[in-house]
Image (cartoon, rainbow, N blue to C red; front, side, top):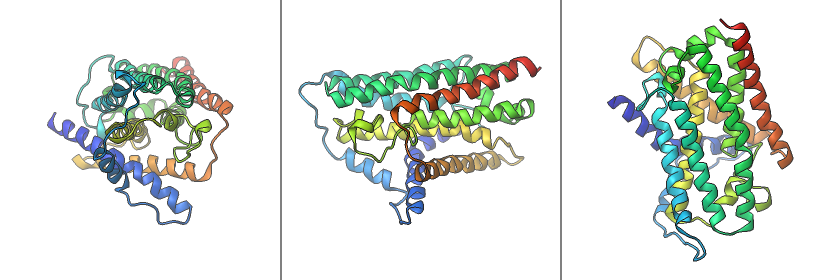
Length: 306
């Protein structure tokens, strides 16, 4: 248990570091040196030292948004079996609980944006409420697929120890569809290119960034840190699937997990360096594609995999 708690704390602390890897990859493709890997930590510390500026037109919801969004992202990491180790918390049906937990964080983020009465933030909140609908459908359908393969309904049963390797042996081709769909969900849920561009400052084209325009100081630090933890959550699931090997030595699985995480974050940086963001009317099609991939995988598993 203590090892799982240590890995959970390490995940929370290292989430901004891995997000900095994306900036390094983008700088490499741009022919630049780029910011240091610890840049996100410098930013968080700088924001923590400042005071939050709160509009008189806002209510308690505006202050609760950053706290709850950060808390739900950190709590979701409690259920992840990092490097194949047991999760800190695991129970039957915990995957449903985690999906609703992330939905709760999204709800308060949207509510905090709407509380400002800003038309720009309301526009971003509407997009944030609309696009993840398809992602939630994809994740619930993926849960059915994993339950079909393992007979369990716990995240640990899907991603801990030898479970990912077993699923590759049982359903290699359908699981490949699921991995691709998970990566598309990662890009959509975390507002990355081609769904959104976190580097833009044009309100009319932003999703996540436009919702936090009125947040500052420690509130903004919690939002940014929570976003890094949420990205780490989805990247961890993909890392366990692409490198599912559980070696004979205790550190082999953790090393493979770290390599998998590095690969996922590097791929995000490559996509953001080589692909343009979609028009807003194309984003639902992108999210629906992830649902279609998991749908085909689930149908194949129900019909052909015994």
